[in-house]
Amino acid sequence: MQRRGGRKQVVTPGGIGRPVLNEPSRPDNALVHALARAHGWKRMLESDRYPSIGALAGAEKVNESHLCRMLRLNLLAPYVVEVIANGDQLKRPTLADFLRPLPAEWSSQRAF
Image (cartoon, rainbow, N blue to C red; front, side, top):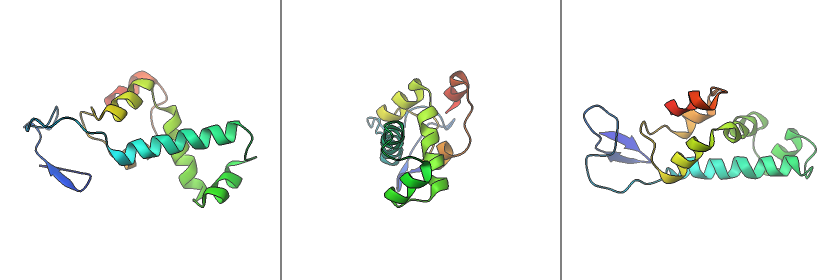
């Protein structure tokens, strides 16, 4: 049994792969929402709508360090973003896993 989004899910004995039940894969809504927010914030900074991360954090009413951690999601490999959007993560990482420092090389990010 593995907890995912407040529900328990049965996974294969090795702990990897698709669930034992024939459920279609579902995206982790928290991860998808965080990715969308991170990309939106990046666009706001690039468009010079806000002069600094501090100004953007104040306008969005979030802590500056939280905003910086969320902005790191923009550095994810396109492959990883696609897997998250489709709900095909093998290890079922959580948003907290992605807010930790990530490998810079995209090939190293495939471990997620």
